Length: 218
Image 1 (tube, rainbow, N blue to C red):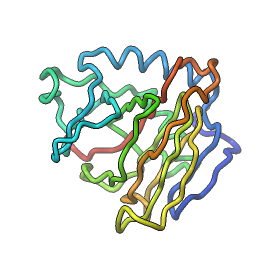
Image 2 (image 1 turned 180 degrees about the vertical axis):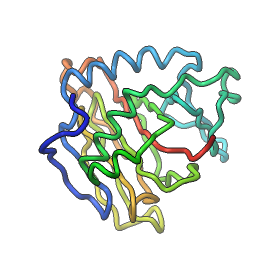
Image 3 (image 1 turned 90 degrees about the vertical axis):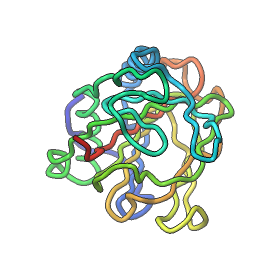
Image 4 (image 1 turned 30 degrees about the vertical axis):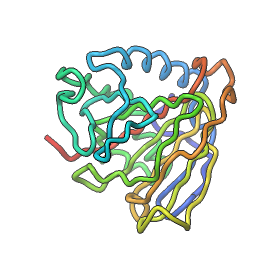
């Protein structure tokens, strides 16, 4: 993959929010699946986080660079096993910068230095409630990559969890990025479509979602 795609296909879902269908190549999807299997076993294993209300999320998560737990980032996974989180790989940052370049231009991509990734695994019935990504200390783009089964992704407004919102089917290989006026938009996953991905993507079942962001922490 070159760092910057020449002619990306994109849909502007909201001001500053872009959907790139089929952005990842099949080889890139397979690489992310292989890496996912490595990341999910340690040093901090994948787990379902528990939010403040006591609700255990149906999505399972493992982190790179910084460990996310509701609602903060730490270098060690104190809510799991106390181990330091695996480092954020530079090659993953290169992919994120390429998405940013396609959405906002090369200058924005050069400035973009993500230091954390949340890798979420969705099984056939997993969902993600409408929420804002507000645990970061800076206002920088959030880059999302999808591999595996299709999901119904809901991208809303910055005021509340209700309408207006747009429903998008994110398929294996899709990228999504939001920044600027849409950086703090509510968003979530309302539905999974089991067994919708081509086996060639490398994932036997379920969906992997990798979101990269700049925490602003040191």
